[in-house]
Length: 286
Image: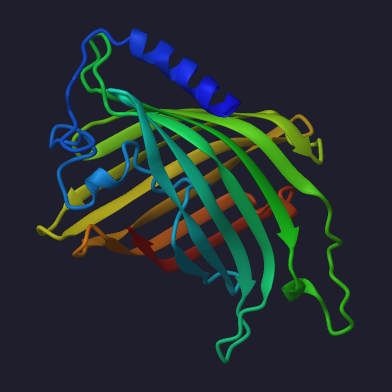
């Protein structure tokens, strides 16, 4: 309950700064004047997940061609309660898992990360003289990471050795909602972490795009860039995604994507290591 109170207070302050309110929601607020343009899938969330950000709820898988690994993402983000005309409270629950491909449809699981928390998001709204409306999202979340038996050798020994990895953090994103583009900036503040070597602030910047090819097929993608600090030394983490998005019946969508990742690993058990890979995959949205 205290998370809900904190989210409500912060976003009430944000809405007080709104100079010109814009009614941009049909159902939950999307029109073809902002990035959340009219389509079958738009009413699912007020603040649509950042396309390339690795730390977003997804349902899908990708094959990492450079290192013969797979990633399997299972989870969802959902809006739950409308607490003001422009503000919704929601929840995030998902895992992202790394597997190894061994042929014959065998995929030993090496590590799995668990993400859950609450979020508050706003519909796009006009502020001052800015040419496009802004949307905001705040997440309060926990993430933990665990070694799995797919890393064990024939004797049952796991290498590298597992350790306790967890963090609690606040993640804030401000996005400018253009018709087909959505540039954004964000900051993550980690207030509790094990181990203690990660830096507490993680800034990010990026953009999403989505444009129709036919009524049901879109091209979409994005780039997400973060500065990840460990023991006072910051390095870049860059994630890119692009592909074709197909809007299905029953307000669902399917995407065929290409991915690129370079920088500090997104998996907590390997947070101090660097990953670089190209991947192709499938994502389902509902």
